[in-house]
Length: 455
Image (tube, rainbow, N blue to C red):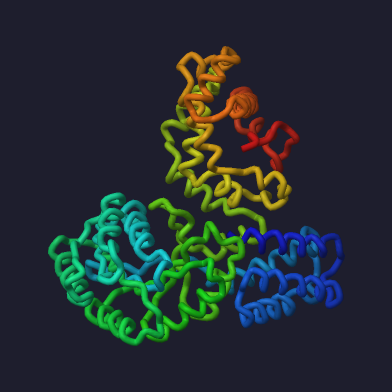
């Protein structure tokens, strides 16, 4: 997300570096480029005008301190204003109500409501330690109820059964009564997709809202629709007492116009970002962290949270101790690292959150392919225990057998062995000099060493 905007703004900021002062003359061209970058990102025009004007007022005549260059001053100003546009701070779900706290989910057809309900149930269960029940009031879309039942089973949430013969309001009321009896902490109510101009459907969801009195009424919207997402959310907000927005499919949105427009146009905060298809691909929306990503400064806090939550700490400690004792890094270890990285969203998600990755050439970024990880794991799985321990024995006939067994080519096996050899060298640095030596080998962290394996 924000890839195009991030690239444009990085180029803009470079133009003012090295100058003694940000003046009316040198900021004029810069702000024109900022305006174009935001418009290309499909940010709503009123938001763009307001944003650029606030940056201009703050930037004109801003003196450069001893430690800051004009570029750094401008980065700070733009960063502050991006945060202000998106809402200052994360606004979490307000669940401090008499249980069950009810969350009503609304939105257009195809925006990802049902999937978001499943993701939110998992989020609340795992991170907030809540007992969650879900119910579908969508009696119009074929298999909507079945889909939610499957998702509930996957994430370990309670599922309240419903059927298409009943009225949505009655289903919601019955689910609320059942949630009270079962001592449920949070009840999430999924609803049918509807247009804000459909009076009958809007009347129905108003009745549901009135009957169950939710503490949160969330609007789910597809980020790929850009500024239209903000306009649609505003229209729904005029009919329903919305408390926040879930922005879906952000992993496929290189522009980010929706995220930058919604708060200012609707007055409602973005509460979550859908960042993938898996049930754990839901992130709380932190404006300061998103602004940092847009400006190519990474998102270290989110990265640390991902590591703490998704990396198997026992396995990581076991590998560290093994390397510190001078033992070899094997293909089995390499396979485990690939799986751990895949759990964190893959190499592309990692690059998005690491500082300085905006400086990596596009030619290198384009080679990052997370599907490649699955292929590498398949190749290693096709090896014998001896081959994983002693890869030097893998010659012609063995390479052909491994390639056939993994559905790949001999060239792919050769590529994996080359990448493994590079990783093994990096791990030797870790075993000899700890993290300090390992970091010297990574790009942008003090070294011209081997760098990351070329995934």
